Structure formats: structure tokens, C-alpha cells
Amino acid sequence: MTDQHALEGQVAGDEHRRCDRQVVTVRWVAKITGDKGQELCLIRNISAGGVMANVYSAHAVGEHIALEIRSGQRLEGEIVWARDGCIGVHFGNLVNVDDMLKSSSVDNRGLRTRAPRIEVYGQAHIQVGNRICSVDLCDLSQGGVKVTLPEPIESGKEVVVSISGLEDRKSLIRWQKDGRAGLSFIRPISFDLLVEWLSAQLNADGLADEAL
Image (cartoon, rainbow, N blue to C red; front, side, top):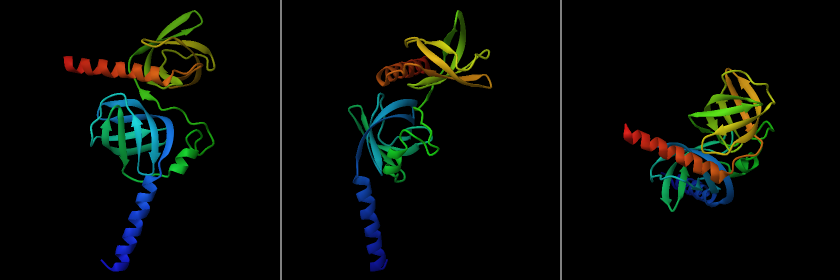
């Protein structure tokens, strides 16, 4: 390697390290997909090269994960340390933190981005007036839920959603297509409560797997 090439490589490496050291404090709810499936985490800071996040189940160093921060924002990386309910994640590729900060609430179409949704399985009940129907859960977030519907319900209609382990929530039917419907909660679920509920489901699934 010539001296010029060596100098260029050193400059590029120095620039990479400078970018990686610029840490921004945030408080972003994210979906983490890893060896055990999907769960929520809370990102506490981010740099071009990685994040630090609070997690609510055990993760191992070396585990490859994907983070979904808002709709369409997906980052992949490897856990490089884990302790006291926190993990450090190193990205495979550098990210533009400024762009992520700008798009954390509005996407590139100018639309408000939605909270990360976790795939869930089980049944719930929807009350429409005096009528109650059983539905299958598809996914859940702080702001709403996607379900399968046995029959159409008038869009925009206010309903009450009952999910075992959570308080009943007044909701609005936002959309319906191919037997599925998206409902938005009038009062969102708190992050702590949703994490507690998801952790209970994860533990129940783990116990069921051990019993098989």
C-alpha cells in the first residue's frame, strides 16, 4: 500500500470513529426482533454506529437483532454488551442520525408515523353497542390493534376492545380489508403496561414450549 493510500485509509477511519462518537440522547420506543421473537425496547441514545437500549428480557452478546423504530425505519445490528437490563447494539452500516431525528414523527410523505406493532396471537372481544363478537388478534401497539373480523363493522364506529390482561379500551374502527380491521385506541396503552403484558405473553409461550 502506498503512503497516499495509507493516509486516505487513516483519514476515512478517523472520520468513521468521529461519526460513531456523536451520541444523541433520545427516548424512542422500538420493536426488537431477535432470537426469542418480537418485543418492545426503549432506545436511550443513538449514534451513527449503534444504540443503547433498555430491554425487558434476557439477550446475549453476539445476538443479531433488528430494530424497528417507526414505520419503515429498520436497523440491523449485533449486541456487543448486555447488563442491568440494557444492551449496546453495533449497526452493520452507519446511519444518518440527523435524518432519523427529522423522521422520528413524520415520514418522507409528510404523514405521521405509527408506533411499532408487535405480532400477537390469541382472542379478544369487540363490543359494538349491545353486540359482542370474538376476534383474533394480529398485532398490537400502544396506539391500536389489528384484528380479524367475522363480519364488517361500520368504519369510524366507536367500539370497546377487551383483551385478556389489559383494561377494556374504547377504540375507533379505522380501516377494514379482506376480513381484517385496524382499530385505534382513544386512550393509548402506556409503554410500561404494554411491556409488562408482552413479557407475560412471552413467558407464557416459553412455559408452553417447555411443556411440549
